[in-house]
Amino acid sequence: MAERGNNSNKNGGLWELAEEALLAGVAITKERADELVGELTQKGKLTQEDARELVDEVMGRWRGDALRMGERAGATLSGVFRELGLVTRREHEELELRLAQLEHRLRLIEGPPKPTAPSADA
Image 1 (cartoon, rainbow, N blue to C red):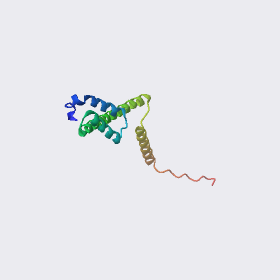
Image 2 (image 1 turned 90 degrees about the vertical axis):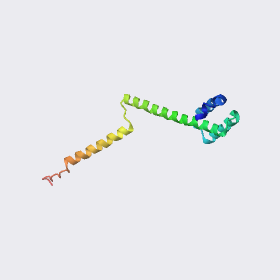
Image 3 (image 1 turned 120 degrees about the vertical axis):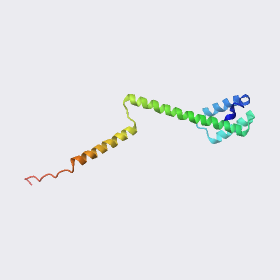
Image 4 (image 1 turned 30 degrees about the vertical axis):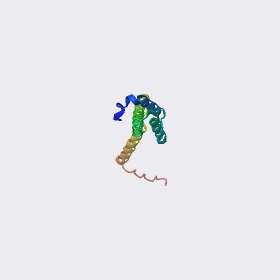
């Protein structure tokens, strides 16, 4: 929203209101976003387009923040797992695959099992 700076005098408080409302609602629905656009249009004397742009920008920024927080949490958990000596599921699966490959190679090297001679008692 390039016009945010231009409209800051008439809707600076509205920007904060919209940001707080959107950040407070973690899972905002399209219907609620449309309601918020209507409220901002009525209260702030913004055009429908400006209000929609404002809501879209704040929601986009929130999604980006949520994604970054998730990535940081994942990195933190990975560090904790490493400290505890735990492996990830992916690492475990890779080790299982390597083990299966080694067992297969060993069977190939050893060759087929040799038949045992029948005992003299039989």
